[in-house]
Image 1 (cartoon, one colour):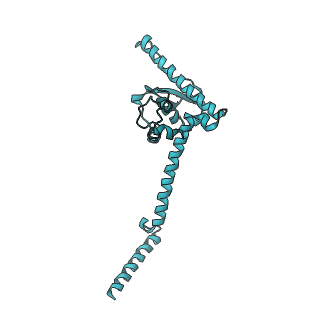
Image 2 (tube, helix red, strand yellow):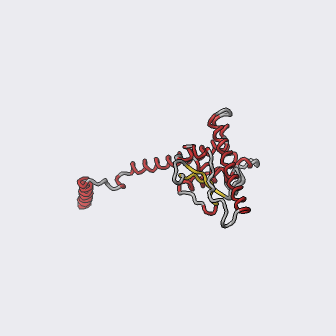
Image 3 (cartoon, rainbow, N blue to C red):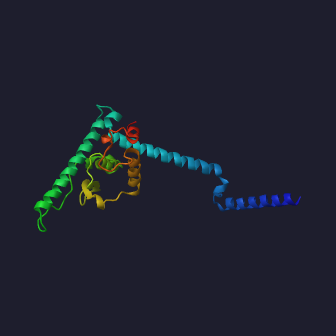
Length: 212
């Protein structure tokens, strides 16, 4: 009898506490919502998986655009052109640096190293977030690792500019770093920058998986 009273008292106390939460307008403690907690966790996990799939798919499109969009696709052609444009801009920048080093001095030198490029007109790279894939591709596939391309708003005028930053002075944002680390794991595991997926003719698991 005494045990039943104790149990009844505990239930009554619990109901009173729960009513206080309701009356105060606060949400009940999370331990009262195990199903909602489990659903939220499942949703977050699925969202993370989808995010990873989207990142891998976006880089695969850049690596092999014809295989993704078709040989005569305009999108595939533009992606191939964008890769060539970035390599050309990089090589031009490096040439300017070399000329400046050889012919310039403390009084006479090249000051503005911005590069004009159609890439600065592509919304997918300027206001979008796809430029990180080109930056990453340049290091791993084009084997240009001394500088990192950066798109920035032009100073004192509308539009965007393409500049290059020494690798040692460049830092990824948190989101970019998560993308880079995922792509390194998926496409270049165990390799160093400069050895691209296209060079992985050894049939390694990473290369086979990336192409599948």
